[in-house]
Length: 113
Length: 305
Image: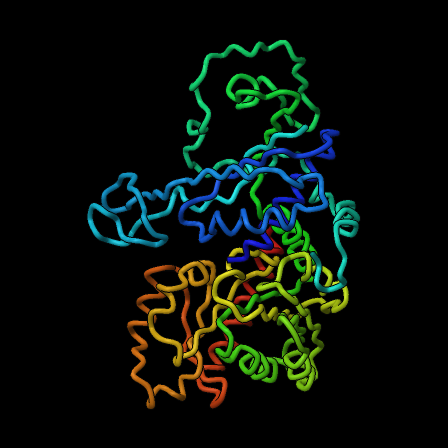
């Protein structure tokens, strides 16, 4: 979904931070992208080079960390892995699971020069 | 970036002065969601720490850190002159800051905003036209229309006498809070009115973009299949009200209303649901009552806050 808009946001934030730091350019951007976040890392990478072109982030590498999905099952009262958003608890099969990880869309840090 | 006025980075920078909402340092965004990734850097401890720590570590006023904290100091081989800056911001934080501005603007004027989302062709515009006609004696309504192209929908709305601003997103698949902020300046919704934002027909992307609305309303038509809420769960999870539209067609279809609502509630147990037909007007009175009651509740909450 909307990888283009997300990429624009990533580049804006990175360029703004680089300016604040007085950096010449951004060389790497580290992202946390949740496995359940409906964002395709390949699509982000594809968009990134296009969007970053002509900015201080041109040529920067995206380092994407996939964060595994997890949730809290209200019936089992424990943390369980989640393979899909709003999916069932793998232990009890019920759907009373609150997602606790896996929907991250975050810029963690970046490397500047 | 902005498809309303075509402005790029310059205007975004200008807007920073507007409300201070964009001026926060990199650490202001809540990190209180408890996902555990402070131990999963890919470069951890896989090499000796032999590239000395003799560089000055500058701790910047805005909280940015170089070198010795995070992975910048000890854990990235061949760091050279580069340094690592910790950012920790949601990718959507820019949008969310604009959404906060919009929400504040709307609250100050007592405007009750709904963000209507659905797939294309679910009957959103028709539903809005009917709701405006039913409401207009009691409540002023203004409309922001989002489409990739044409101003057809805004024209249909204006025919009811309500003011409408059309946003053409061009290549964009959703409205964002920045576009809506500009549209609000043009539209100047009167105090105590309702604002309907009709998002681009798309069941995926608009779920992630807060526009500053009070509620998202998802419209689903009975010609679309009962399992839409399972296929596109994010939208149904983000919404507070589901309008199941085109109920007049039910006698001609094998659509299972109960199964559809059960699917929607599985994704979002707090979702409220109404079955309506914009064509015949069935269920519209309940929808209009929901709008008035929700607007009154919102106004009361604001007065208390």
